[in-house]
Image 1 (cartoon, rainbow, N blue to C red):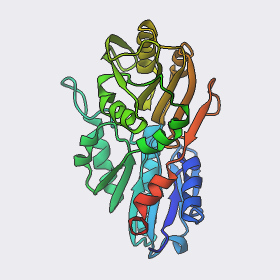
Image 2 (tube, helix red, strand yellow; image 1 turned 45 degrees about the vertical axis):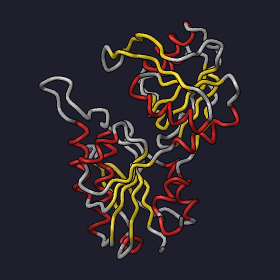
Image 3 (cartoon, rainbow, N blue to C red; image 1 turned 30 degrees about the horizontal axis):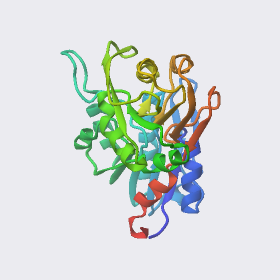
Length: 303
């Protein structure tokens, strides 16, 4: 298969470099600047795009709206420059948690973002560990929903012992914890959580045996850290050893996340580069690149 032209958005430099290296190509040299009023101006070199299959990589981390708009502007620029086809790689999809309405008067943010992306004229969209896989049905283009769990499992394997237990910090992470536990050959447990608000949660109990065990807390994302902090408190109360590993695909770590995790005895955070890695973490951070996973998905004939 002919190598695609790779366009990397401003939200994904780490993964962009890794994916370009995996392909053995250089990213397209795009030009981005802002007008005095804040509008984003983008230029792509037509000679690098015309008649080619174009893959645009852009995660939708904060500021989510800006990065989504940048993705659509890049897609429009490539389409108008004569791209033969367009594919979007959006490792983390913002607004995916707004996949249902809890009460009247709320928007369906996940569906709205899926509708917006339909304006990008993408033939395919690739994403990794979507918060709710059911959102796939809202996309106008075929969506390839990839899982980073095998990559995370390989990174975690050297740290697994006969006292390791995989823990889901809430009921929404049960399937993920069960799958990771199976990959690692370890038991799993689940913390029952109730959400009080967008930032605050409380725990209601624990299912599984954790006393004397070293937990791997796994979730699809770490946002403000409230869920993990509450789960860690519950686990410590149940007799877990103060030796916690956090495993996640999307390490957003926004708002009060570091403050909340400061009280958790974190030995290591293992995450992917779906989110640009932070450099100011107070604990070891092992970053697993998604590049091999994306390369396989983007070049199916080479599998």
